[in-house]
Image (cartoon, rainbow, N blue to C red; front, top):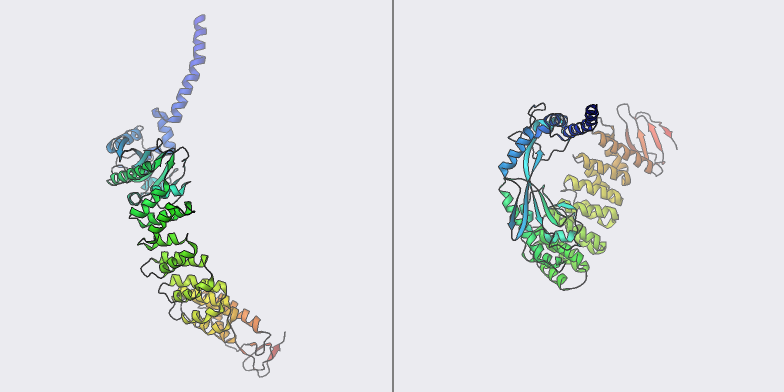
Length: 483
């Protein structure tokens, strides 16, 4: 009898244990039936083809995923640790799913992803500096090589050398995490560029190691070293910007950094220093603006810096020079500023440069003249309205609505009534006509609407009585509509 009790007790204990084991295998995919159902539901098996291509959705090879990933990892080598410049760097190979362009594919995958995606092994480099970095350095953010996204971006500027920037790929991410420098690289593990990246990372980490003493990182000396020795202009410009941001008081580090930056052969570095010099930065910024060999983007930065920091009266003669510059993007910045300031003294200059202006600049001039509102610009705006570019004609029509007279209406009305004109241009011309009529309706020599059988047009009321009249052309006694 006791045997039955024993068997029953065993069943009560064993059945739940077996059921839990089976459920665990089903959920985590260790047993073949669990793996089959689990991976089929999430299409995990699709990442595993020996050449990296995805497998068909209904593959029945239950162990293929493990076998292929292991074989691919073996082909590229196991995780290993190498020493560069005395810095221990772990090289870790990780599977990544990418599309046909090499961009990472996230989960869940679409049908298009399954058709074109492939599995590759990429590397992550981890340089452990936990024994070197002070406890106060706790950076857990990351940033692309050309961005500044760290909690302490001054330290990032000091760490990122030109050599490292040149070695990383555009999509690589670099960050400090728990005392380690981590590079999430887009390179495959067998890419020859990995060795170049390893050498650059080791060199950057060695600099950080050598600058750390007594629980303190001498960031200033690292930034000055960038200014003195680094070949990368972006690195030097970032270095002087961060150095002057941190070291605001006069001191040896700030003085040495300024000397190196002001004498630097790159205008970008000199301009980065000028932003922190106040009045002393005026001449540097002006020289950068007038430097024909500098890039347009850099000259625009110099111009915007000057407009932010210095009075308009001081910049007015400089604006006249910029308006004649071959770079229309610079002239457009000045044109917009003149319009915002409603400077009537600039109207003659703006009108003089319209003849050779390209469409973007011509439209900007029309907008500025409309904002200023000087009637002397009407003829220039009418000339702009006759140009072929739609965006220029729309801007001119909007400006004429503000300052135009009956002469402007004679040019606007045919466009407003034409069925062959672009819709946006017809709307702008029609609105301008209505606004001009409304503005002139109470003046002597006001506008009258003449409606001959074939077309209507606006002309001066010969009676000059300050009213709008609607009359056929052949009617000698028009019916006046007096407001």
